[in-house]
Length: 404
Image (cartoon, rainbow, N blue to C red):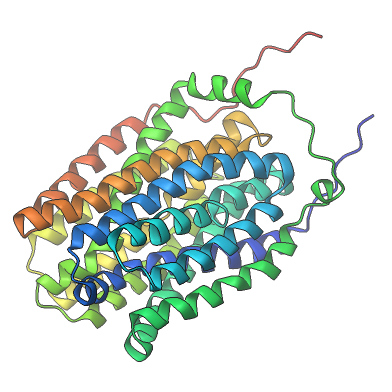
């Protein structure tokens, strides 16, 4: 009889996973604060900065597929170590980028690859392997909420660092700070991987991919996640500049981003908890519908500090609330053996949407002097995502037993 693999304690997975995601996501959510000071100092256009962040999202998505495969095969611990080192290198390189091409390499390629090894897909794989199914969606909600708490703490911290030390030195300080992830990763070092005994899998990587990509619900989840990426990265990166165009102060923008993070602590936790008792496809459809309504109201009314605060709070409730539910559906349908890899492929779709959202925002603004067209696109995409999540089936897939 094959012995049951030893698992990590629930508290250890949640604390270490939450802190790692909080740092990695928190720093990333503040990138929009660098757009104006960096482009003004270097004489670049907003499209130059937006392109670097767009490449970051594609790099994150592409590398995420392979980091997921490696985490499923060799454990998350090693992947997180490499990711943290790449993050520090990318932030330091971004501080010294002398051209848009170097910005793309550092803030784009390196930081994107780093995020692939330090955020949701890799950490959720540890949750899937160590936490039972009846608490899995809740646990993913807790870790997702930590990512939002990181945004709440780190965005004003980054704004303070830029104001006190300048945008360049602020990046160097963050490059050193991200290395805190290295000791935290020890808490996610799974005993079976540490002993050189990877979990037994009844499917190869190719078999798992063939099964997932041929399954309609997986395709629909990927399409919905594309919309999520488009919306949150467009808003996260371009909202500070949009508000500056409306005559608002930079402090209002950093407060708005922090509010998004604060309220998303509640949103992601509630979403993950609801995923234990409600159909997850209905939760996802409701989230996308609500996003479209909130954006439509926001841009149709005069932009004031109060309207910005209300928009940030309500969007915050929906910001990363798709994450625990989407990943819990994947685990429920396909199991946890290849969870990090399959989550990585769904997240790649998210990042393609992120690329288009952040780049299109800069491209359209530089040519029209307005973000109006992009706001309208985000509303239309909300309606699309609401509809395509309704047919998603979350029941475990029926597999034909393999013969010897």
